[in-house]
Image (tube, rainbow, N blue to C red):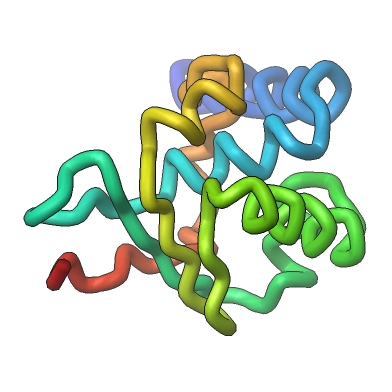
Length: 123
């Protein structure tokens, strides 16, 4: 039981650090990298699909829905992602990782329900 409490406390500290020390762009990139499912035919590309509304996803990152949308659009303008309704495609995971500038594990929240579903890797 003590182990469970310690694990939850550690996850809370990671969440708090992410919200206070990482920019909105870093939090969005980390979430995309963590939840993306790499393509079988093109390992450097990936895609994911929102399971929850953008408002809930933004809230999980401690962002307003407007800021979350703004960050997604900025990534899309740079050619780092393509957004089609609830589906987000990542043409190059390596380029997106470079932008994030932080280890994805720093923002991992394993006890939360998934906000994205890995899209089928058909191409």
